[in-house]
Length: 379
Figure 1: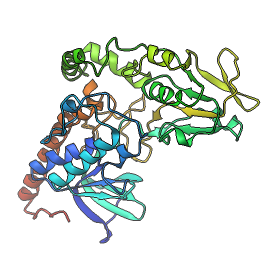
Figure 2 (figure 1 turned 180 degrees about the vertical axis):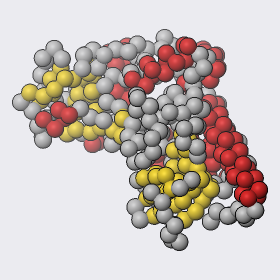
Figure 3 (figure 1 turned 90 degrees about the vertical axis):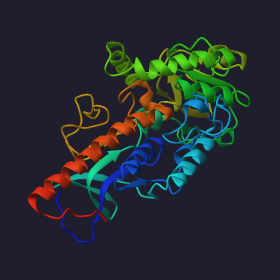
Figure 4 (figure 1 turned 120 degrees about the vertical axis):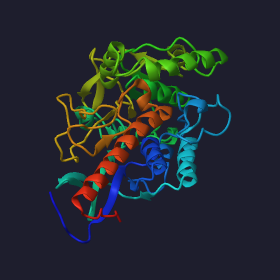
């Protein structure tokens, strides 16, 4: 697609997504005096965190949740709630005067000559660089048989769950036994008989909020940044595992669930029978509520460029798509290291991306000057 319409906006760089990964790129671009704009579908900065379930708490303490140029406020060993993280992102944006435009949902990225066209409804933006910072996987997934459950059963994906007040009186099935599944099963067990369905994926053998964990987490943080990377055989093996399977339990352990009366059935919920969920063993569960903690899927079909590998993931290295100059990603699951998907890991990848963008911009100005054509200033 190519357009010369005078109504098209122009920016040197468009960052899609103003969560921690997009803001980190913005910070480093601003330091390099690059012109850019951040577009986010939420009207308010930080709502990507505020709209999670009310009891959500991060699995890393505040000391590992800062962004470039600003540590997370408060005690270093405090585990922030989602709303606190949202407020931090809002403060961060104000502090560094990052140009965020909220309420803009991008629906297309197209080639436009030697540049790109970003579309959001009727809005069109021409740009030399596009940074996709929408997260690793953000499309809520529920199995196809969910439509076969009785309409009288209340179904809620973890993406839409806020608190127990959303549920009907009666039993609950939580499908998916990774982090969010364990968290929500424990929370719901206080008021409902709760069944947790999903294979056991292990658990870390220490209390992440205990004093000994402070030393352990320091070591794990080093490993996440320097050992588990795409440059090591162990890291590459881990990336494949992380991208396709749930991780071990972190805060809530099997003993916590058992003590709360949660029945953990280590098998998948496989289908529906007479409108009720059925486990792999054939057991039918007579429940009034189903909470789908079945994760998220990646959908990059709106990027109309040949950037995906055979596995459906972008062909990038350190966030840079070398086959499509000017296209970048930040915040992909295990993008360059395990830490890439953690709040505190956003800055390192962002710095590499900003450096590459600045280099492209400098080269463009040099080529333009040699051609004797004044460089066009972005709007």
